[in-house]
Image (tube, rainbow, N blue to C red):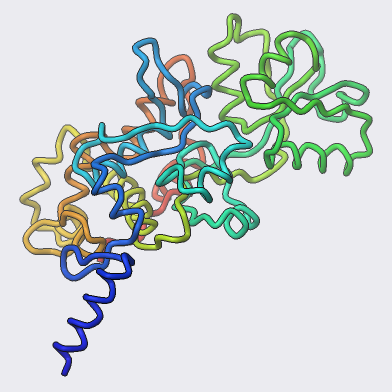
Length: 344
């Protein structure tokens, strides 16, 4: 009777298209299925934010957020280059995730209640803890937001950034004109052109664009943080199985750094007697990727091709011209907020 019931369930899944069984009888979700059938992950990204998502001189996408997409592609398909990148303006993100244009998004997107629910999105682990700041010219001679009273601030339209600056101005009773621009590049350019005395976005973005400007010494960031901005990948709520793959790929990157496993030394860890390492890397019959319907040693592939979280951070953000410190994006063992649940 049990075997007959299992056969009926399997047949109904196949007929309905809900999913197919993968390793260890894991039912693959619709997003995972179409990625495997297509042989490529479609990832929504930014192409205008240096350090996080940009197109380089060779016409290739690169950046911290780009490598999160590549890590998921490596986990599912075994190839970090099996990704098609879909550039998205801030206002296009909701439609892209709801309409199935993309499989996932890794595009400096803040995790909020409304986006989690209204967008029909499942947010993965936070990959970069940020906060909204205000950038302005050194020559303006201001050090606080209150001193911008009577001035104007440029911001990206349709973002939490726009809502936050509106709230901050109103709460302080300031007479500041908020000039909304279609995207971050337009907000930055409007500030450079003198159409606004200041501009606001996540502090990481302020640092990135100030650092890559013609003269970084002309710009400064005020000593104020207007919000919490937990940034990370997201995927459609229609596929919790794929959302698990995204989440545990990120957790694997964090746990690998904590364990000291890098792209350079990973072979040294494959024969480790440490059961925690064996589970993380899916070695010696220890279950790992098999729980997710992907290769048991998926993190070996990810780390070998991209490195751990720290390697990704340093490659894109810890080098000139950014030279960003880890700050709260350090491991919990180093006083930061990054903490990966155990692979068990």
